[in-house]
Image (tube, rainbow, N blue to C red; front, side, top):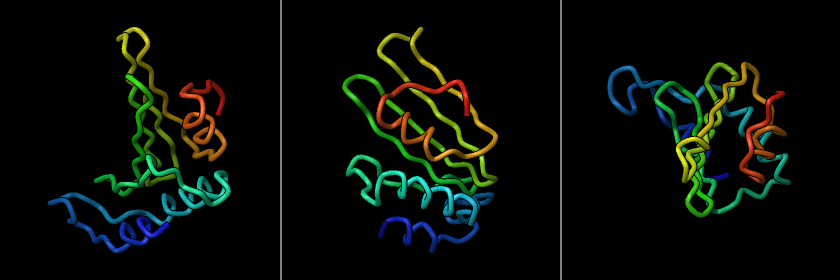
Length: 114
């Protein structure tokens, strides 16, 4: 998780006015997610900072693109951009759930419950 330690060094304003430091809540949620992966972060799942203090994960599978935002306040936002526009989907969860994120990464499907 060396990349996470880099993100934790960011300060308010890191990406211009209004950008915020990564929240302790987002760091804790990401750490829980990594534990769900048995501590092994896949190469295509490098964490990135979100301007609002969250952590963003992005990856692709074939022609589909996926994004997950661990929100600064403890929520989770998942998005899938598919080959066919009608197959695009997204969902916001008010509370982060590492198992939901792990399932999304593994299957590409967004769970209704969470």
